[in-house]
Image (cartoon, rainbow, N blue to C red; front, top):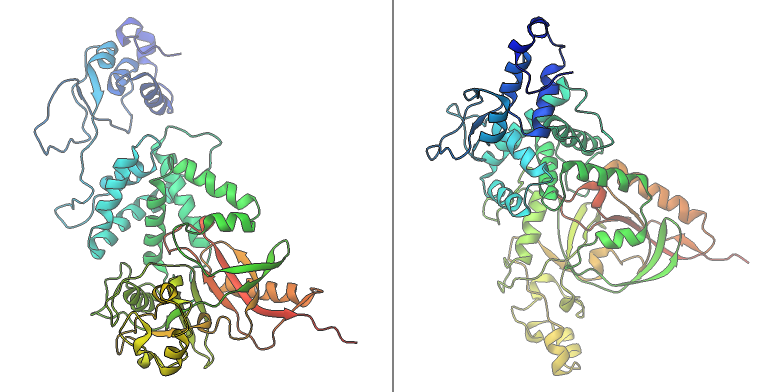
Length: 483
C-alpha cells in the first residue's frame, strides 16, 4: 500500500523498490479523487517513468492575457499537502477556432471541444456558444475543425480498446468519453444514409455531418455517456406510432389525416387534400440561390430551390412557415420528385390552372376565370384564409401542385409503415416490400395496382437516427370480395 504523505527517505527499502507498471494510472486516479498534485505523488513514490503530465499553478497566480499554458509540469511543491492546499489544475485556454502556424487545426483543441460538448458538467450556455461559434465558421474552416476531431476519435479507436468498451458506469476518464463518440459514429455510419435525394454522400463529408449532429444533440444532454445510453435504450425497445408522433417537430404543420384502421406495425389513413411545391431532386446547387450549409449533400440543389421559394424567393417575395414532412416519390413520367408541403392557408384552393396563370396577388383576382368564379362564393372571412400561393419565379424549376403533388393521385387512402434511421435506399426498399407483403395478406385492404410508394421524412438531416420519424406510404382500397 502507498501513502501519499510518505517520503522516500523515510523508508529506503521501499524507495529502492520499483513500483508496478500500473502505478502512474493509479496515481492519476488518486489525484483526481483527492485533489492531490500528481507530480508530488510521483516524487513521493519514486515513480520516474510516468508518461503523462498535468499542468498546475499556484492558487491566486495570474497569467498574462492570451497565454497558452504548456503541458510541462509546474515546480513541484515541497510536500503533498502543499500540493493539495496551494495548487489548482490549469485549463488550457486553446480557442475553438485557432489554427496552428502551419494551417492545421490542433488535435488538443479538437479534443477539448469534444470533451466540453460531452461533459456532464459543462453548462448548457457554454455548449450553445461553442455550437454557435462552430456553425458560424465558413464551410471550409468548419470541415477542417470537424476533421481534426474525427482524427482524434479515429486515433483513439485504433490504439485504445479499453476506451472503446461500453462500461456499466460513467467513468471519470477522458478516453472513455471520447470512446462514446467513436462508438456512436460507428453506429451511425453502419446504417446506410440517404434516399429521396437526401444524405447520399459518403466518406468524410458524411462523418462530419454525423459528428456535428452528435455535438448539436449534446447541448441538451447530460454528457455523451448519457447520449449513448439513450441511443441504446431506444434501439432495444420497439418503435410505436405514439413515439413517432413524439418525434414529429411540434412547431411545424403537417397534412391532416384520419386513421381508418390500425395494425401493430402499420396503419391505414385517409388524407385531406394539401398543396405542395415540387422540383427535381437531382438538380445542381445554384450559385445565385440561397446559401446551403452542406452543398455537397445529395439533394442540396432541390432543397435550395424549395427552401428558397418558401423563404421568399417567389413572385410576391412572400415568406412562409416551414412544414413537414418532405415527400419523395416517383413522378408520372418516371422521374423522381421532391416536395415541400405548403402552409395550410393555401390548401383550400384547387390550383387546376398552369403555374404561369397564378396571379401575383393575395386575393384570387388574377387567377383563371374558373377559380375566380368559385372564389366569388366564398365570404370575406374565408377569402383572407383561402389564399392563392405565390407563383414561383421563372426558371426556378419549382412547381405548385395540389393533391400532394401526386401523393393522393391514385387514392386518398394510404397504408403507412413507420421506421427510424436515415431512410437509406436499402431501408426504404425493405420497408416498402414489407408493407406490400402485409397489405397482400390483410383481409380488409389491398394495394392499388401500379401505384407508386412515397417516402415521408419528418426531421432535418441533423437529427440523430434514433430520434427520426420516417414513413413509407402506398395507396390502398377496400378489398373486393369475389362472390
